[in-house]
Length: 235
Ligand SMILES: Nc1ncnc2c1ncn2[C@@H]1O[C@H](COP(=O)(O)OP(=O)(O)OP(=O)(O)O)[C@@H](O)[C@H]1O
Ligand SMILES: [Mg+2]
Image 1: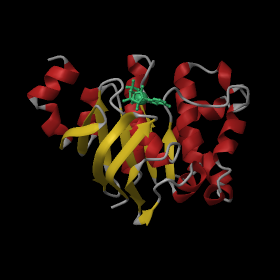
Image 2: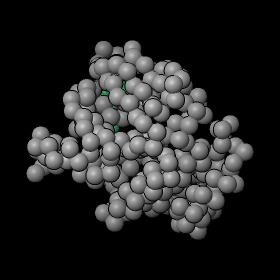
Image 3: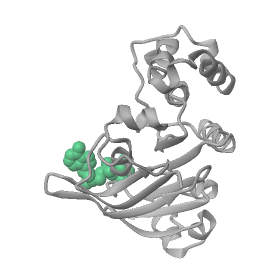
Image 4: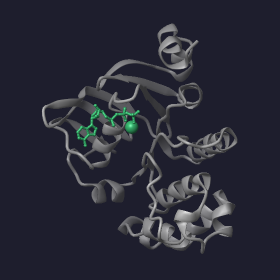
């Protein structure tokens, strides 16, 4: 197992955001996490990344306990995330943004190689490497956010609603990219409002409700489940 989550409980003050969340991710898997607004999806990603600290429970990455470890530690172990709302540095150029992604000790020595890989994956970023990132289109900024994450040479990437605000054609491109990254061996946790597509891609999926996993199964299993179809697919 690349990631093991055991009985995770997270509170913001008195408000509980995660309630005894447990699951495990195998190396090379693509798993989906589905749930309504406020269900706790981003909180789960933030807890794994070390942005927030759980009250109890355990997180292990490749067998190492990383519970409560700060982000620079989890990142340097190979846990990357593409945050909700594409967090890039808007006043820096595309190239500078990518370089910032490679500041981790694990990635520093491989910067040239990583840039070549990112430019191969996203030729558009190569064409625009001197452009100020904040002036790029929404779709281009999303590519940059993914590119910057890849510069850190992650082994596990957590995507938080990457398709938000993208036109349908770009959403298709984005999912192709995510699948391609997974085929190259990257383990992926995908949180998506686009439930139908994410369940199609996922080998395993979990449904979060009020901070609790209420259902799990293979992507196709959940896609055919009446409760999921009613609640998340509107069919
Ligand atoms: N920093 C915070 N301080 C206090 N409460 C928070 C904080 N972050 C999230 N919450 C609360 O925790 C709950 C879970 O939020 P979270 O952002 O994890 O949901 P989500 O599933 O990602 O929702 P969405 O689909 O809208 O992004 C919500 O009730 C939210 O208001
Ligand atoms: Mg969220």
